[in-house]
Image 1: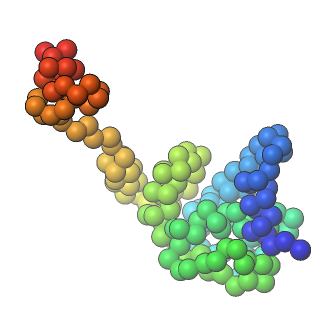
Image 2 (image 1 turned 135 degrees about the horizontal axis):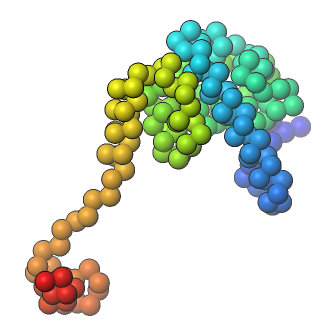
Image 3 (image 1 turned 90 degrees about the vertical axis):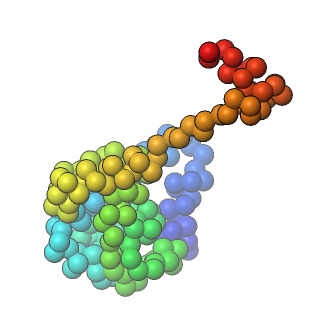
Length: 174
């Protein structure tokens, strides 16, 4: 019998039927969004929601017994944003877990994953005020700005011609 984690990996990463994959991932996105909405919506009094046996937490977050593999996929996604260590590969129904979430890190991870449906959830306003959300968005943008390196006139041209920049592409700009 395979673990929930193995089932999650098989269905999310090794499936070859594109239609079945799309259905599974879209189903995951719906459950993931609902789970995050419950977590954020019950902040700051959500520790009871996030502590206990894996099957109980899954149930409280909207995952059924039949979707425990999807719940473990959810745990795999959130594990980098929790303060305590968790080995999702061994999570079973009776595994005791506590999701001690670092909400700043979670928000940034959602931005990095380009998960618009998650980082734009209205329930984030229960966790952060408008100023904090703006600050986190600014931090993300600042960390992801592309910086062009200035080329000196006497440096080799980046086009690879072997000429000096001023005699090659730099001359075209003047």
